[in-house]
Length: 332
Image 1: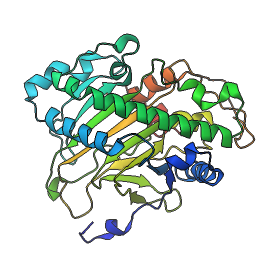
Image 2: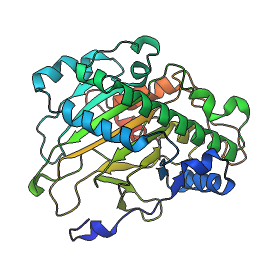
Image 3: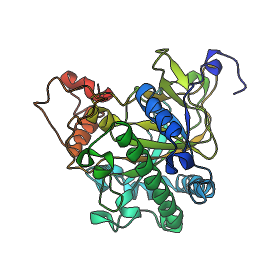
Image 4: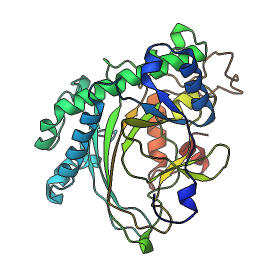
């Protein structure tokens, strides 16, 4: 980044994990992954050479975003996210004018629809999406394979029994509430600069983010300060979500993050997209048995992944927000 200001210096120092090394069972890389997930909850995943044509596929999805969000608003309103899916797994959300926020448009595409599974074998979408469906499928398969390697590695590091292995509740060939979210942030002048939303944790298991511009900040585990994540070509920026944190009684860290324009700079038009991985909806959010995980003080309330998702969504909406459940926003 070329501008002045203290934000330029506050770049997060997190590990880069090599997917190829993990696939080959490299013990050192597995230990580095485990430490990154315990200490930071964020890491970069070097996917070059390990995921087929990943850089070309990522470029295709950027093209899809630019073309989708260039469609007329009246056309996108046919796919209103609040009307198409009660779980908000599919459709478009258009920005409204709100001072101090980074205005954005978003689109959600369900994994089940992309891979033709379950109730989403056919899902409502602009015809343009069909043109890019081969790239979306290739991308989804690559992410699911990488996620399986990561989950298997973490399960091994935690000495989990087969019935508690994280892969058990994240089976790629089965229906799940995973989705791809496409996001466009609109350009804004410095006078309207602000965070896009309140700092939060992600509600699922893992998020794979792809972006080529600065904008993502994480709350540093050691510094307690907001630090910038550096965009890296050929890499996914990965963060763990609440579900893995809940399953391990916070041994694996779900880190707070936000999107913000660098201080003293206007918000440039910015595109990013992410794959949100969630467990099977019937998976119990019960603390696993592991020598590395502190036993739960009180597990009288055991809820499913699906119930957790619904509670988290409710806290993100003004009309269903509950003050006494504010902890849900950060998964604490």
